[in-house]
Amino acid sequence: MIDLKEIFETQHMIDREHLDIRTITMGISLRDCADGDPKRATQKIYDKITRCAERLVPVGEEIEREMGIPIVNKRISVTPMALVADASETEDYVPFALAMDRAADTCGVNFIGGYSALVQKGFTRGDLRLIRSIPEALAVTRYVCSSVNVASTRAGINMDAVRLMGEIIKSTAARTADQDGLGCAKLVVFCNAVEDNPFMAGAFHGVGEAECVINVGVSGPGVVCHALRDVKGQPIDVVAETVKKTAFKVTRMGQLIAREASTRLGVPFGIVDLSLAPTPAQGDSVARILEEMGLERCGTHGTTAALALLNDAVKKGGVMASSQVGGLSGAFIPVSEDEGMIAAALAGTLTIDKLEAMTCVCSVGLDMIAVPGDTPAETIAAIIADEAAIGMINNKTTAVRIIPAPGKHVGDLVELGGLLGTAPVMAVHTESSAAFIHRGGRIPAPLNALRN
Image (cartoon, rainbow, N blue to C red; front, side, top):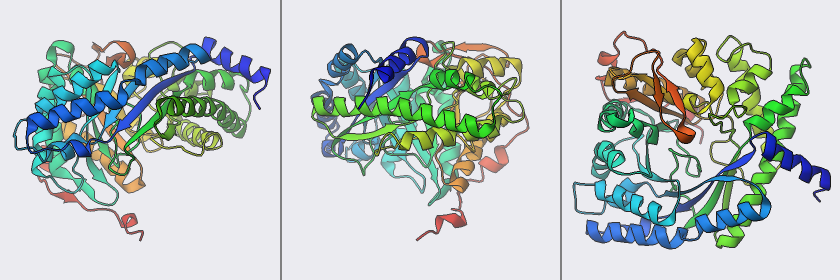
């Protein structure tokens, strides 16, 4: 039973501490849309998405009005398009992205994810066609997001895919140079990608998922930061307990919204993702949580330990509030989307090397990082390889969403707008990794992959 005190407490968190539902994401299977004729296939894709998701936005807005809880984004994820398009007799996959984009526009959603390929162990012809089409697909669409899984703990790291993605990211930046490389903000390279992630740009509807599901992503960095102000100076275990209790409250709200959306849409409830997702707004920052724990600036020594505590406590609190937890679940550290991270990067405290260390203990990886536009493709590929190695060895999801901003140099700012925020251009090592990247092949799976 929820009492009056809890209702007022939740309202305060919404009004003053940036608590919201970051996204309701409908996952839709498109496996039955495969067709040898690409025109028929793209029409099937458009028809099925618009049929399944036609009520997603109105129902989300209805729940917002009735419950007074902001639902910032309504989104769609679909079966990795490389799997669907592979049956079609065509070399050109861009029409599949355009069909997704038209469907997203018709449904009124913010983004649609799933222009994706899973190549951790090798490529099919369809995978290669899709990957090579990504720069153009992201340049000519507005809502489409893309992801490629290049590694896993069970398969190792596909270094040919890593090299190719370095080149694709550079090409995507060039094709969207008039927008400071914005296309790269809609492209993620994964190790151990999950099938039920509701967050963009990495969302896709996995092959193990049901026909159609509702997944919800919550957010609450501001709530956690505010709660920690009440335990200033107290021992670390008190900090962990405070985060855990706060995560419970945030997740319970997400569970409520997910169940309600599922019932009204007549679609099964999938998962609640517990991730703390920051925004560029003041007071809605993961970096500020770490500083509230006692760090003068995010990125200084102790940052990785503080983030590990935060990530673990968020998960422990969240699983008590919902029996259907999934996605990525933890703390995101997207530089451009977190005002505290932006400040730390501008001050020089937060570097790519430090962010890499932090990704060992957080939810994802190097996220929304801008680097100089003249950064070689091989250097970008090497950054991807480093992140994939962390994910592979530690049996966790890691990712890279990096923007080689055309014409920009270290210290410049890349204005991406909205939730994507502002990315300070960060320095990369200038020593070459090209010979390593061009070896190709596959880094074998680690010993801990042999778990059967």
